[in-house]
Image 1 (cartoon, rainbow, N blue to C red):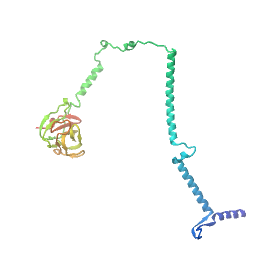
Image 2: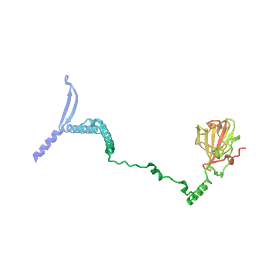
Image 3: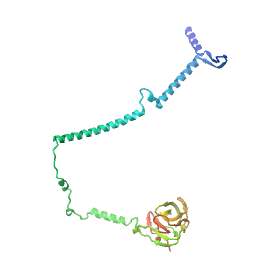
Image 4: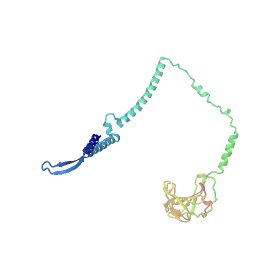
Length: 289
């Protein structure tokens, strides 16, 4: 028992025994660097170095293209090429099957295995011919009900009905003579007011500017949203004084009369009024005299 204890102490002493590693100048024997070492320190340091080296090598192989140079690992390029070749071979097999079926049919025709059935082409269309005199065109009950529903909907057509219930006073945008009135039959849902170029255009009521941009057909356009679902649009302006999102008061200048856009023949204001998404005759709300 004593021998085992003594042997264990000897091993521990050897592991912890200090050594000095000295680096000398070969010519002058001058001491440059010295280290205190033990067998245990050398073993631990070497083990950590080996573990780090193994971990670094594993990371390089797993997450870099270097693994492609190791035998047994396939490259990404080869996998992609193999996948493409698999798809191509599958397509070629399908085409080959169709070709074989086509050749088999040709072979049967050449050998006379398929009989030629003659079909009268006119007989195929005979069954689809219809005599108009044999059709009963008398209106049925469902047709009459549908007609009544359509007529009822036409009473509230978007372009024929205008709700005049507006609880606010509207002011004329400019003073001038009306050159063209509101005419829904020709789809002119506005009135054109002739005025001198540069005449200030004013908002008909308090509201918020929801559109203020240039358009190719109607030039400079500004649209103001008012309360009670009312919209006013001012087109063919020479310039705009307000931007989208601005709040305007009734009578405030928002633009100037101009002659911009393709659909214009002279300086005037094209003024539209919309009530709850329906076009309205501005003369029903504003006195332009």
